[in-house]
Structures are given as structure tokens and as C-alpha cells.
Amino acid sequence: MTPTRRTFSKYLYASSFAALVARVNCDASPEGSGAEPWWKTAILYQIYPRSFQDTNGDGMGDFPGMTSRLRYLQDLGVNAVWITACFDSPNADNGYDVRDYRRIHPDFGTMDDFERFMAEAKSRKIRIILDMVFNHSSDEHEWFKQSRSSRTNPYRDFYFWRDGVNGKPPTNWPSFFGGSGWEYDKTTGQYYLHHYATKQPDLNWENPQVRKQLYAVLNFWAEKGVSGFRFDCIGEISKPLPFRDMTPAELKEDGMALRCSGARLDEYLKEMRAATNSYPDLYFVGEGWGMSRQEIVRATDDRNQELNSAFRFDFELQDITDGWRKLPWSLPNLREFNRDNAFEDNHHVWPIVFLEDHDFARSVSRFGSDRPEFQSRSAKLLATMLLALRGTPLIYQGEEIGMTNFPFRDVSQYDDIGVRNLWNDLVVTGKVSAADYLSNNALTSRDNSRTPMQWDESPNAGFTKAQKPWLAVNPNFHRINVQAESGQPDSVLSFYREMIRLRNSKSSLVFGSYRDISGKFPNIYAYVRADASGRTVVVLNFSNEAVNFQLPADIAVKKRLISNVSESQAELSNIIRMLPWQSAIFE
Ligand code: NOJ
Ligand code: CA
Image (cartoon, rainbow, N blue to C red; front, side):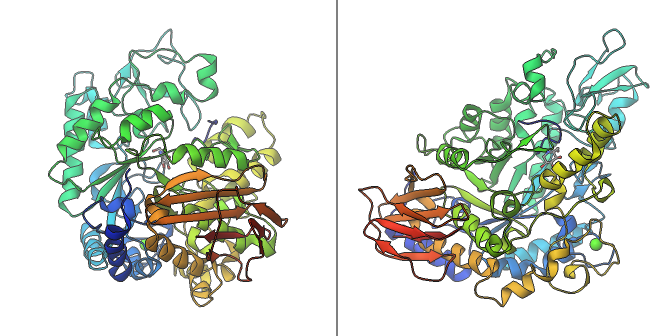
């Protein structure tokens, strides 16, 4: 998730790996050798369905559109696709407010369209992962309609209802999307809890009936052949009861840690896993937003039978404050986070690695260079890093062609509920100037990553035949698009393809240990991945200046395996000359 308010081993040896790599390379099979689960060697790709490919001209992406692009994903080397929130929803938060967990959103098509998509994905050996939004439902879900109808309705306890205190909400909890986290409902004279929008009431997992219904939803989709689930804000499902006010310190971070401190999280996750044990290969990846490292370790250590991995936001949230204000990011913090996220202290934890998703601005605009001569090079540098870390890499749609932030100028250009609500809370009330709010949101808003996929140079980038897509296409689509980049050997897209091939051919890049060797070079990020088959050395220059990087005394490199700069590398014994924004991997 993203706050829109405030901030916040196994080693596989060379021989068995060769068999596995051969399969991954030859038929792009997501299946492992049997020695390791499929999701450890997979390249994961996230589709934001609304913005991927429209086929019926309504300006919104759909399942037939996704089906038509599976070949593209197969060619890229993708083994599994996470379909972002795609169930029936009134779209208060673009699908993260589910009205019916067993129905495909009519905007995206029918169940038949979904099934055709599944069949085509299967024939291309691409696994499908669905988004499960189980912390809350829509207020238009049948359960909530029943729940709010009377205090004695059997569904009353599917949600959290409390009396107010002296005419005020039960506690001071804010919502992440602005305003109070409790909404008064006059039908029964009580308040219900919503961590997010008022149209997203929190489900009460204390109630065994709620859990039973949700687990049945997982089995329903597993039966249709999906291979895993991404669990939305999973750390929040167990509430810290009884509810109490947040302290001023807790309020500063919107009570993120408090909301994730419920005592029963591990119990629920174990129960959920056990409830789906007819499908032992399912990949469970949680959105670990708000969870501490310790909580993540507990929930993902493979001995605990809970989740397989969890997205961590420790680094992603460092350059955003108040949910919208941009702060500078720092390379030492990135290095530190990646070290921490490699879990060298516990290889029973398998991380997921990502730079972008639908909740953050575009990574090249954020961490790369703005200088036109370095834009594509820095996108490739980020690809090098993403695909050479320990953990399953996630590519977010458009990242593989170097899509950038959108040139937002006006609040009317935004769709995001968070941006619009905070505009009312902050700008309309005069607390923040419009110029300040807009210039920061242009850099931080999650709508930056939600603009339509750029396929070609035709109108609206080949995304839709409609005059107007649901969100405007980035005007740079003439330069940055799949078709143009497919034909260029030095494009960002071609680089991704090459990097994926390299990762699949080097067991050290997938399973190897991790050691940071950046030393005292402030603009260099360098690390070694090593396993029994050998050692790979990754060197990244995060600056507009060339750097002579000195390797530590115990490391020597023999051969360059890949680089985003084609000229050969100047090497003087153990000093490597890195050009601006150059990335390179050596063995
Ligand atoms: C996380 C999702 O990624 C985000 O888009 C959504 O707004 C929140 N969770 C609430 O469901
Ligand atoms: Ca459509």
C-alpha cells in the first residue's frame, strides 16, 4: 500500500541448478527442478489491469487485452504475473474495495474472459497470482450491507462496530486517506472502523466466520488454476484489541506499527495456509507494509508455514513524508536496506525485490537520472540491481521500457483518492499552498505509475481506441514504447531481456550469498553474490560523474558478463573505471 497521508539457504549447487536453468531458458517454464519451489526462480511481473491493454474501446484495460499481451510477457522471460485488484468493485480505491470476491470486475470482462486468459497463460507457462484484499471489503459488499442494517444482524460482527465517546469517534485513529478512521452510521447509531477510505470497512478477523469465508475465496480461485496470492496490507488483519487512542508519536506515522501489532497475525496466517493445503504450491506474498522486520521474519520464515515472502517498504518510504511530500533519497540507505533485505542472518526467509508498484512513482524518475543522456542508461542500471539481488524480482508494467513519471500540473489530472482527499484537507483549508502540494505530488503520486502502458506510437500509445483513456497517457510515448524498443538492441527493453537471461543462467545471482563491497565510494553501490558455482560482482555507479572504483583486496574480476555501456571497461588491476550511471556485472 501506500500511505497517502504520512510517512512512514538455501544454496542450490551448480549441477542441479543447470537443469533448472535449462528449463527456465528453453521453455520459459516457471517450474523449478523440484529441489526448490517455483517462485524462487521466477521472474514476476505486475499488471495494473486498468492501464495495461484495452480491447473494447471503453478506455480501460481488460482481460482480453491482457490475454493478447501474454506473448509479449513470455518473450520478456516472465514466469508469473500478479494481476492487481481485479474483482467487482465500486472503485472507491481502484478495486481495493471489493464488492464480490468471486466476480471479475465487469470493467475487465467476464469469468469466461478470465478463464480464457488463464488457459492462454498456462499454454505459455506463465503462472497467475491474484490480489486478495482481505483487511477490508467495500461498503457495498453484501456482508457489509447486512452488517450495517441492524445491531443484531448475523453479519454485524463481520466488521468492527463501536459506540462513540461523547459524540466523537471511539478512538482518535485517522484514516490513511484523510479524516477519521471511524465513520458514524446513523442506521444503528454506531461507528465502523476503516483504516482506508470510508468505503473500505475493516473486516473483523476475530470472527471465525469471516476467516472461513475468506479462505473459501482462496480455494475458489485456486480451483480455477491460479498459482498464488498477493495479500493486501496483511499486517493489519489482526487488530490490537481493545482499541485505544494512538499516542502523539504513533499518530506521526498514522499508527502504522500499532495497526500491525495485533496478537493473532501468525495464528491467522498459519490457519489460512492450512485451509488451502490442497494446493501446496501456492505462493503467498504479503504486502508487509507497516510490519517490522521481526514480524516479517516470523510471517515468512519457511519453517512457520505462513507466507512465502513479503514486500517491505522501509526503503520505499524514506523519500516520502506526510504521504505526499518528496524528500531526497539516499544511496547509503538503499545499500543498507538491500543488505538487510538479503536476510543473510536467516536464509529461511526468501525476500521479494521491487523498485516500483502501482503505489509509487516511477523508479527511473525517482532513483535514476533526469539528464536526457542518462535516462535510459539509469533505467538499465536499476534493472541490473533489481535482477541481481537475492529474492524474487518483481517488474512492474512499463518499468521494463523505462516509463517515467507523468508531467502532472493540476489536481484535476489526478484520479487517486488519496491525492484528492488530501487536496481537500490541506489545500482547500489553506494549510498548504496549491503550488507546494502540486509540485510534490508530481514527484510522489502513485498515479505516476498508473498511466497507460505505452505499446507503440499510435494514438494513446496503442493502449486504447477510445478518444480518452481513464487516465492520460504520458506524452513521452513517442520515444518510450514497446514497439520502438523491441527493435533497438540498446533499448531498456532489450536490456531487461538480456538481464533476465543472465539471471537465469547464473545460480549465484538467484541463490548466492550477498556481500556489500561498496567501501568508501559514496556514489558506488557494489556487491558480490556467491555460491558453490562461483562468484558474480555487481557494480553500479549512481552518479553523473565517472568513478574509478577500487575492489576490495580479496576480490578480483576476470570477465564482464553484462553492462549498460557497450564500450569495454577500463581496468587497472583491481580498479574499475565506471562511467556515469554505468552498471556492470563481472565474474
Ligand atoms: C495497498 C494497495 O496496494 C493500495 O493501492 C491500496 O490503496 C491499499 N492497500 C488499501 O487497500
Ligand atoms: Ca476495456
